Length: 187
Ligand SMILES: [Zn+2]
Ligand SMILES: [Zn+2]
Ligand SMILES: [Zn+2]
Image (cartoon, rainbow, N blue to C red; front, side):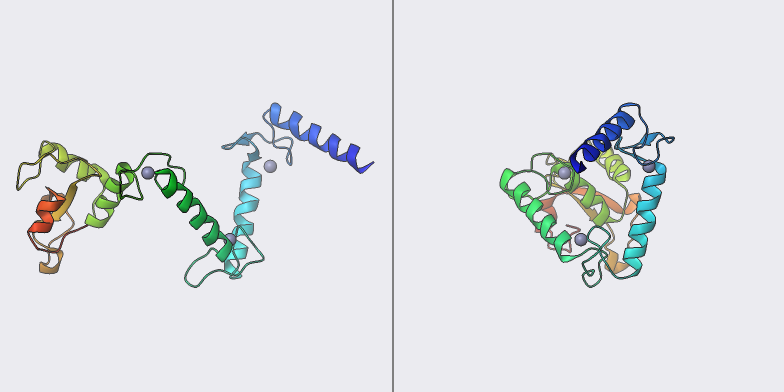
């Protein structure tokens, strides 16, 4: 008896999805991942918010949050397992990124370039502009620099001396050259 109810539920679920409707709210169209509607997503958002406010993990509501985080030990373990598998396969550890990494790196050049911009305190667009203006070469040595590989942002006036995170105050150098300068690098 139970089996046939389950079977019917599965069929209803399938029919709803095939017609682009939410299985739980059959009058509402599905969105995004194509299995849920906006109502479902809103309900989940509210539920997650309540768990977070109660100090519990939104993905594992029976688990307490780790200190300073909104996620739990199970989240951390599954992230570590995923990262480990990425490292073994030579793939970027950023979730959803399947780009290959260069030897000795845990993230791909695209994500490394992204973090370089973040560390330098500018947007990727600004860093791209600086790169174009320097014709893809280290401003100090003329060595060819590659984004996310050896291109290293450098504050012309260092942040310690009051230098700002502005396009005018940032230049791109080969990271070895930058390191050889012996000043505090951005990387
Ligand atoms: Zn729904
Ligand atoms: Zn969790
Ligand atoms: Zn990546």
